[in-house]
Amino acid sequence: MSGIHEFIDNEVKNNEVVLFMKGTPQFPQCGFSGQVVQILDYLGVGYKGINVLADQEVREGIKTYSNWPTIPQLYVKGEFIGGCDIVREMFQAGELQSHLQNQGIAVRGAA
Amino acid sequence: MTSLTETIHARLVEALKPERLEVINESHMHAGHQPGFDGTGESHLRIRIVSAVFAGMPRLARHRTVTDLVRPELERGLHALAIEPAAPGEAIRW
Image: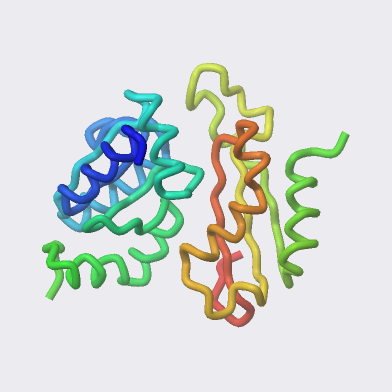
């Protein structure tokens, strides 16, 4: 595994929820990243935001690590969930909430 | 000159035999989003597609099926790609 993949691997395995995004959770710099931030914040889920704009190596490395060409990218317990479209679809269907809970992650407003 | 939108449309028709397909250039919606984006190009695309290929296929695989077909454009700098894949009979909103 290359250095950057090792770094990413370490992040997704040592943090329950990781969002690779453009900008930060406090200040997203892309509408798609902003949508995922809003969903996670709405659910009250703690997560680590990694700003790919701050590091070109991470920006390219996450695409090859996940075999996914776009940002944002959401990981839960080391598993790639998807990008903005998938996260939103899952949220709207209630599947994101149940997936998080099944992984032992507390979700606001859930039974 | 054939636009990126038309090229991708034709490729998806051939590969996925969609019942319905829209390739929409949404670049104008992102004008000013970054220095250098004036929204007149083909930087942000949305693909809406209904194809039997997606029946029984999980979400990630559906998206990967589409992005694999658009890989040349993504590698040449297509900035954003939104995808709404569905199998025939599934609820869609377009």
